[in-house]
Length: 300
Ligand SMILES: [Mn+2]
Image (tube, rainbow, N blue to C red; front, side, top):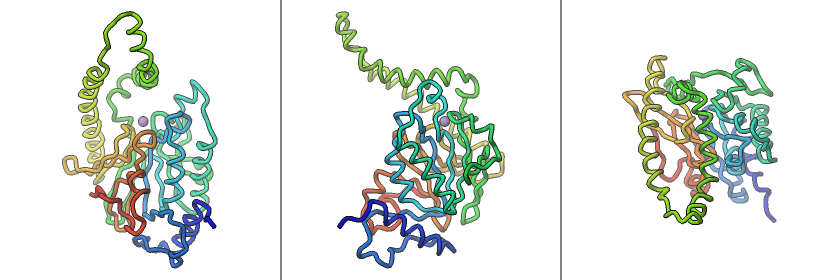
């Protein structure tokens, strides 16, 4: 007899809600012997961003698995949750994307504090700041206090992105261009071959792009860290550049929760205030007995 895939997570959810006093580190359930092997990640806080629901790129099934496995007191949705830019061009909304929304609403209903900080792709939500949708708070930015007393400023980050700030049209173009590039690349070389042209080195072109991208990422990280310091925060939690990270930048903690398009990552705060980047692919395949931490956790 097989248990339903996530019955374990549901049972644990009730248990931990009943004993959230300190949300102590994960303990095996009393009936561990016959419990399904699905892991449960019990933490104080979770930050996820850049889900890009409404696009084919969104890894909704992995995201659902993560949302089912994780339990927290507070869940921050750090922007680019629903991709309004792409939905306006073409409607794409499969069942799994609906399921993600339902899961988020359900968490809010069941007692998780869910806070939505809109990003640039879901900037339409910025019209509804300070409102509440089915228990989900919509705020422009947030200040989170960790269990060990640190103040973390929570923002999507696009407002500190030079490209987006200086030329919105360029950013929109860039988003579209990225999609096109993927399609174009497939056809490009067959066309060139037909025209009798030699193979064009895509890799050389990309290397050049990456070099520029590295300095772009560095600029972005420094800009948000500086802004956090201005606000008197000890650190910043953001998303936007689809690259999970946890490190110190000139005495300010820079935390990026990554994305659910490519990297499938989240940022979590443990009961004691410790922060960790969860790589979902790695985490779900780790041995269950190992407790809460990922195999090689990055912690600050
Ligand atoms: Mn963004």
